[in-house]
Image (cartoon, rainbow, N blue to C red; front, side, top):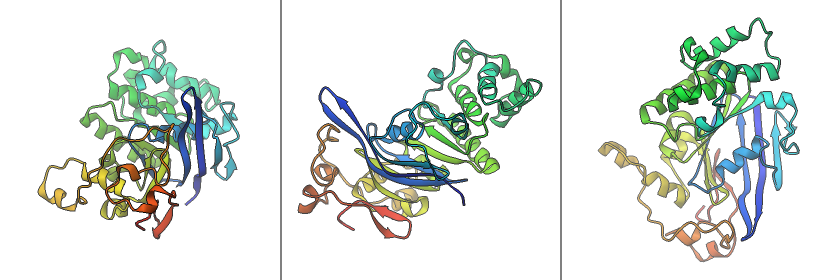
Amino acid sequence: MEELLKVEQLKKHFVTSRGIVQAVSEATFSITAGETLGLVGESGSGKSTVAYMVMGLYQPTDGNIRFKDKNIGKYHQKRPLELKKELQIVFQDPGSSLNPRRSVGKILELPLKIHRIDSQFNLRKRILDLLDMVGLPKEYETKYPSSLGGGEKQMVAIARALSTDPSLIVLDEPTSALDVSIQAKIINTLIRIQKERNLGYLFITHDLSLMRNIAHRVAIMYLGRIVEQALTKDFFETPLHPYTQMLLASIPVVSEEEEKIKPERITSVGEIPSPVNIPPGCVFHPRCPKKMDICSQEEPTMVEYKPGHFVRCYLY
């Protein structure tokens, strides 16, 4: 499979009046064509910051971002048009990412014109094809965002991302603000389109249960660090990091069978430390019930526990 994205030792620090915020530290992962990597973490873990660095909205403090084996981390905001065509993003709130003064047809037409993807004669056919691709009737071409529901707006945002025939789409919590039934429709649409176009997805979310259905691999972030990464099947069957086990144990279930396969409940203590004041050693140790003396002294490195399953923890 063609490797689309390779992120190595990525860091992002922000200078504030309170000090230096270590938003992301040493994030490493890759995505191949046709693959979905789920990047999961609580609010403030740094997952969206990673997405914005991949898209060029933030400039990395350190580390490398390679797309199709080209170094794209050096580009900040002023990226070549060809790169912008290949890399697209769908934001969490479609209401704020769609221009309220443009009709759906004009919203979809703009990227087609910028990237000169089709002739003026074929533009409308292309727009109708995009609407059909995401399951919206052709009548939506003349509607405005204010007349659409949340799920419909997100479908338009997905259609806009698809308009340039990208290789990779960053999905920044695209279903978090929607009803469960609408979430399912969007997820099924994304899966279908991925299979049809062999797209790579970087799926940012705080909803771990969602990953079982859409992600091929899962990476867990905590306080700017990726603490575990594995194939989805291995991840749910044998979670290794205490933080991962805590997250999985907290997922609500509806049957005794599901309850039996959940990991033993781990109770964390305290609050997530401030990214301005990162604790020494393992960043999770102040909340970890399995901590050892070394955990508060030296930060663990990522190790490959078994092929394809990586964890950052002294227990392994």
